Length: 150
Length: 111
Ligand SMILES: Nc1ncnc2c1ncn2[C@@H]1O[C@H](COP(=O)(O)OP(=O)(O)O)[C@@H](O)[C@H]1O
Ligand SMILES: [Mg+2]
Image (cartoon, rainbow over all chains, first blue to last red; front, top):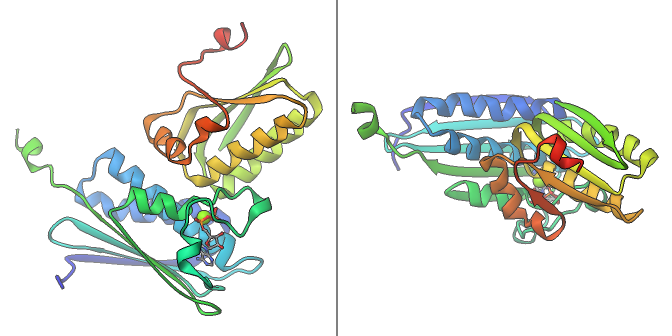
C-alpha cells in the first residue's frame, strides 16, 4: 500500500445546508491534482450523493456528525471516505441497486449509489445496522503534464 | 439557488439557477408546486440554463413534477442542460419520462 502524499479531514453537522459545503471542501482539496472541470464535477456529484445519504437516511429525523477524509497518492489517485454513525444499512447489496430507495414518498430517485459508481473509478460501501456506514470512493486524476509544458 | 416563474398562454416556465441538491430542491419544489397547482399549466418547462451543479436530488425533482403535471394531464419538458447535467440526466433515463429539449429561447418557447 502506497503512502499518501497529502491528506485532509473535515467533519460537520448533518444539516442539509452543509451538502454544498461537503462537496466544495473535497473539490478544493482535489484541485491540487489539477483535474479537468469534468473530473471535478464528477467528484462533486459523487460526494454530494454520499453526504446527502448521511443527512437523509443515516441521521433521519436527528442530527449527527458526518466525517470526510481525503487522501492523495503519488500516482494521482484520490481517495474519499465519507462516514456516518447513523442507522446503518441492513442489506448493502440491495441498497446499491439502481432505483432502490427506502424514501419512496420523498422524491428520492434511488440513484445515489449508481451515480457514485459511474462517476468514480471505484466504490466501496461497508455498513453495520445501528452503528453507521462508510463509503469510500477512488478516482485517479490523469496527469496533464504534456499539455502544460507546451 | 433561485427560481423565476414565467407564465404565458397556459404554459409555465421555471428558470432555475445555482446548484440543485437535496437542500435547494426543497425550496424549488415548494415554489414551483404552489404556482403550478393554482394555474394547472398544460406544459411546464424546467429550464436549466442557469444551473451549474445538480445531483440525483434534481432527478427526483424532475420526476416529482412529472407526476404532479400528470394529475391534470399536463406534461413536463426539460430544457438547456449543460453537458455535466446531461450526464446525470441520461444515467437516470429521464428521456423516458419527459421531453428533453436544447436551445430553447423564450420567444420560441411560447410559439
Ligand atoms: N449513509 C446511509 N445510511 C443509511 N442508509 C443509507 C445510507 N446511504 C444509503 N442508504 C440506503 O440506501 C438506499 C439507496 O441510496 P441511494 O442510491 O443514494 O438512493 P436514495 O438516496 O435516492 O434513496 C437509501 O434509500 C437508503 O435506504
Ligand atoms: Mg441518495
